[in-house]
Image 1 (cartoon, rainbow, N blue to C red):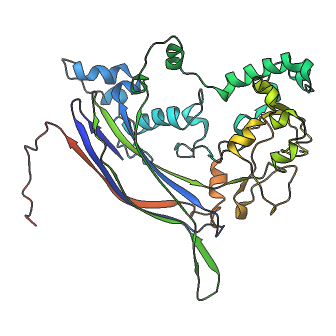
Image 2: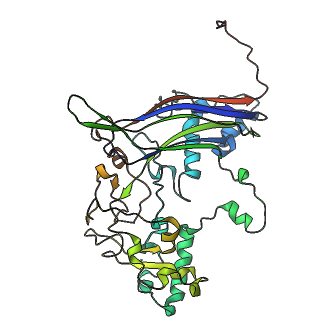
Image 3: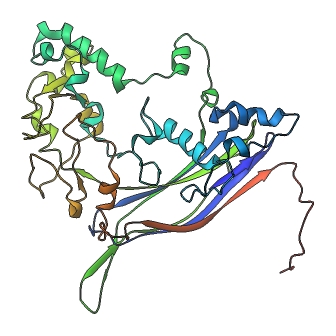
Length: 387
């Protein structure tokens, strides 16, 4: 959903209802999470000067000629000639909330251009990184003892720069003691989030005895936190579905590779976080002995304690991991650069019985009601029935 708001208005309440159901799914027991997000996107967040300056244009020029889309957009429900505010707002929200620092909106999208969210099963792979992205890779690949701490520290600093501690420009200013409120960071503001985790419901076809599974949700949720709008903009609501997934690219648990004293984080190394970095060759470790061309990789053993591990004994490891749809297993991390956060559209469809056909959707209907207090009055009321 998308709704415009004006400066000086206050949202007193947000309420929505939704009925959600999936097409038939392959696995009858693995759960799925349904989420709804509501954001406030200011006009200035869109970073388009012409749209911002429209409010103070004395000639009241119509921006449709310059920014109106040339054809109807079904995925973003925008008609020809209109400005695709829905798409622009979605892009800005995704870049700030659903992508890692520096990743683009289209890092992972469907054929229709809709963004695919990250897999959020946090594991020891939180800081998994390809050896090519580490400094002096070959020189520190065998670092195991105290004499190698210097090289390991260099690697740690590089790893931190690549993802352990993302720093925004506003964070940079805060490091100088300058107070930058989160709402002034030039990014949309999260107003509300609702989520529910459900398991598939199973039914039996009486004519054949074959079981059918699907997942469904019913939402009746609200939020009465007040929000005052200082700038014109939009409230945008997003619907997200995340099935639980397993990684077929993992040959075993990381716990089995706590094979050195440093892996157990002894107290005498408490001030040396770089010592928990561990190097694995491409033919061993938790990612297994892969037959395709792959690089070595690094992991932070501390992530095992913080984020956890994966464990399964249903499917044997394949040196060339593939989709195992019945078990929600995806061929990740990939062998090229060890990326694991984003499934492809084909991976998403694989969870459904008709993955090669057309019944691979999550269908929903509902409405959203915003209680916004402002100065607007309806001067053109129609003649409506009283009841």
